[in-house]
Amino acid sequence: MSSTDSLIYVIFGASGDLTKRKLIPALYSLYIQKLLPERFILLGVSRSMITTEDFREGMKSAINEFKEIDDASGIDEFTAKLHYTAIQFDNVSAYFTLKQELDTLRSQFQIGGNTVFYMSTPPSLYGIIPRHLAAVGLHQQDDGWKRLIIEKPFGYDLESAIKLKNLLLNDWDEGQLFRIDHYLGKETVQNLLVTRFSNGMFEPLWNRNYIHHVEITSAESIGVEKRGGYFDSSGSLRDMVQNHLLQVAALTAMEPPSSLDPSAIRNEILKVLQSLRPIRREDVRNSAIRGQYVSSTVKGKAIKGYREEEGVDPDSLTETFAALKFYIDNWRWGGVPFYIRTGKRMPTRVTEVVIHFKPTPHFLFSGHGYRQAWNQLVIRIQPDEGILLKFGMKTPGAGFEVQNVNMDFHYKDLSNQRIPSAYERLIFDSINGDATLFARTEELLEAWKFLAPVIEAWKNEHEVPLYGYPAGTWGPEQADDLIEGKEMTWRYPCKNLADDGIYCEL
Ligand code: BG6
Image (tube, rainbow, N blue to C red; front, side, top):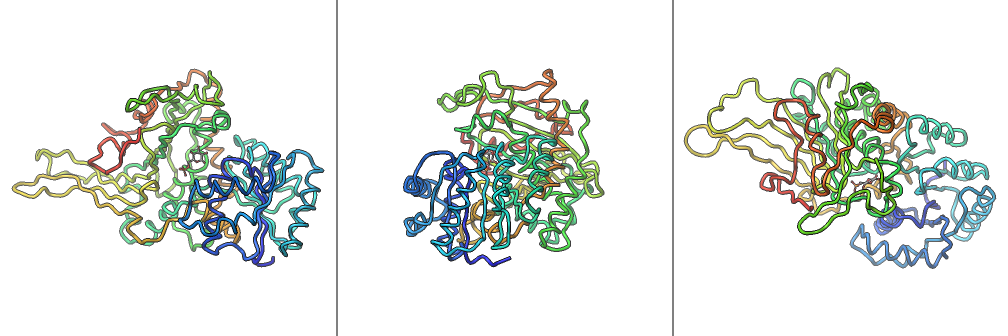
């Protein structure tokens, strides 16, 4: 394989939202930091009949609007490297033309064969485009490497994911496939590994003997925005749990890898997913709760319900909130419940992993006006990246009054260095052939297999309730019933501002 001194980056779905919000701003940021190959050009491909000039103009505004880096000095130079071509994705002959176009660009800009094909299209095209690329030989690596980046969702359920896997592997090698899960590109998600495996004090406690339960929340205050069409055929379980949140759970629960080698890390992630205790069909109701936001008024502002959103079926039964309880059946985690919760139109945007430690075997200070709060380690993935340890301290003065205090580390205090976006990191890794932070097919298949009974029940058993929750709340209160233990609830990060300093946006 040749080294990466030159590269053509091809984005399918170039006129879409992801390209403008994430991909182009991330590529520009890499360009400014001189992290792209010296000879680099990008070809945007999609159905829209626009010119290269239109594309460049659109991408200029996108770089300014969705700014990744505070340096606009290279925008003109960078956008001059962008080209555009319109094709009909399902028309094989269009790929011959595409191949010729790539050859022309290569010779014009002295670029070798190294090529990234980024699938940023509707998921229904993830099988079709790669097959057509292969049909014209664009997967062959004799003149340089060829890599395919595939956005999530990888399939719609277990069966379709297996089909997609087989379809891709007919023409492409596993080593050419990069299945992107942008949560793995988040600095703080990677920091889970560092927190656990570079400190002597957390890991000895990181097991069933000391941990009562683990809670993973990913809340968004926004609704479905302009993605109602996509979201309505997906729902929170497929959109967030199957990929991002099960990956975060796996990183939280995995055994130490033998090295930082990509396959060593990915093997450990896979083992966790393989150890997920299957949810029996009859247990779905007690293990999973779904909800859908309904209209409400928050701080005097009317907020639409999900069914009123553009592109959404007015009778939709798609969930915009999903909460799940599950177990990992292995030696480390036997009997420890894990909880995952995600939702749109919640009071704030926050993603966090909360490790709830068991209480002390005997509490000496009861009767001193204090109910023992259990120690929690909160790993804040976003937006205010950091780690918060909550524990009891003596209130100054006579007696033994105990109060809860926070030991709070904010990532932004670590250095002045900016935190690169997840896409920036993952695009960089894919150009350099590092697949550590990309999901392996087996991982995704395990995740689909695990969720299959819930997906089935939510689709076919209409008596499984879909609870409405007013926009701006933490989802249906029935989700609290999932949590085992007397008076146990989810953590509500912005309910008590004094606690953690997180504001409710809605
Ligand atoms: C995407 C989902 O993968 O992740 C979106 O499709 C969701 O629905 C988004 O809004 C959340 O990502 P982040 O990085 O903002 O937490």
